[in-house]
Structures are given as C-alpha cells and as structure tokens.
Amino acid sequence: MKKVYFGSNLKMYKNIEDTVKYLRELTELTADISREEIELFIIPSYTTLDRATTSVDRNLVRLGAQNMCWEEQGQFTGEISPLMLQEMGLDLVMIGHSERRHVFGETDEEENRKVKCGLEHGFTTLLCIGETAEEKKYDLGPEVLRTQIKIGFDGVDASETGKIWVAYEPVWSIGVNGTPATADYAERMHAEIKKCLIELFGRAGEEIPVLYGGSVNPGNAEELIVQPSVDGLFVGRSAWEADKFNDLIRMAKKKAETARD
Ligand code: PGA
Image 1: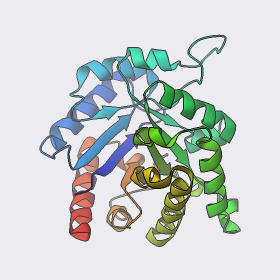
Image 2: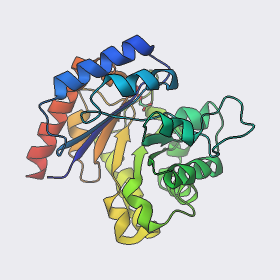
Image 3: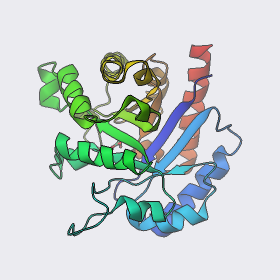
C-alpha cells in the first residue's frame, strides 16, 4: 500500500512544555500504526524544536521547521540558517506556507531560493502552494499553481525529487475564516499539480507526494483522502489536540485503505 501522509503545522501556538506534551501524547496514541503505512510529521515553532527533538521518539514522528533562510550565515537578523536546523538534527523544512507568502510578503523567487537551499542541505523540503480567493473567482487556480511550482522548483534537478513534498493549501481555505475546498475541487487542483510536476521532472515527478491542507476536519478528511491525486492531509486546527488528530488519522487511513484496495 502507498504511504499516507499526515502532518500538522503548529504555527505560532504552543509553548515548549505544551509542544512536548502534545508530541508525546500523539506518538503514544499512534505508536501501533506502522510507519510503513503512514508518514507522520509535526512542524512546531522554532523555540520548541531543541527540546522537542530530544524528548520524543523520532521514529514515530518526524519534526520539521516552519521556515528557513536561504543562506548559511550572514547579516540576516531574525532568520534561521539551515546549519542551525541541522544542528538540532532536523531534516524537514516547510517553505512558502500561505502565511509566509500573504502575511509576510514572500515571493516565488524567495521560496525558490529557500527550496534550493533546503535541498542542497539534504532537507526534505515541503513547498506549500495555493491560490487566493480572487484568483479562484476567475478559475485561475491551475495557472497560479503552475507558476508557483515552476518558479518554486526552478533549477531543481529530477534526481532531487525524492526529497520534495508539496502541500496544496488554497489561501481561502486556511484558518478560522477559511472554507474547506470540496473534494472535487481539491482533486482537480491536485491532478493539475501532479501534471505540472511530471512536466518538470519527468517520471520522477510522479513520486512526489501532494498533500491537501486548509480546514481539514473530521467531517471532510475521508472524502479528501480518497481522491486519487491526494496523497495525504496537512492539518492545522483539527490536529492540535493529540487525541483528535489520532482519531482523524485512523479514520482517514482506514478510508484510504478501503478505497485503494
Ligand atoms: P487549518 O490550517 O487546517 O487550521 O485551516 C491549515 C494550514 O495552515 O496548514
């Protein structure tokens, strides 16, 4: 069976103690699920990473960083270097989350520099992409996603695709004011993303997991995960209590298995 991906970005929530408690609970609750069948990853805030990496069983959960600078060192006040993340034993980095792009104004060119830097330093690099509500209104989703993919992965070689993950997170679907994408719409965009990845990387592009994120909840997780082009769920609010995320993971995994049998 194909691995199903489940992850959460904790954004700017949870202090060190709460993060460690959450990760311990989550790993205990999900310990019986084979990691051959799921990839479970959590992306907590920077300040928690040092303790988190030494406090939980990393065979059960992969930890990642929410952002990273494209340089190893220098005059970049407030930034975090790939070497600093490596020092903590991290090998996963998220680039271009919607809030980075739309609250902090990051551009596709900047995401590209970060993606290349992440890959050069051996990180599994999760690039987030997604169209805004206005772009969706004009049905520009496919064009926007293609642009974000083509610029985001510019200069990346097909031999590096083993370390690339993509998350499709439409801007209008994220957070408390978000509306979840319908399963049909998500599938349409995911299929477009996969087509574009194959155009860029050839057959190697087929292997890149594409996760859906944006108001994933217990009511829509099953219909999303059974879509043929959806390889996993990237969950915010509905994942931030370990027992609820555990329930969602089990429910979606079961559904994915029955659909793929
Ligand atoms: P949400 O967040 O599930 O709370 O909408 C998703 C995300 O930002 O990754």
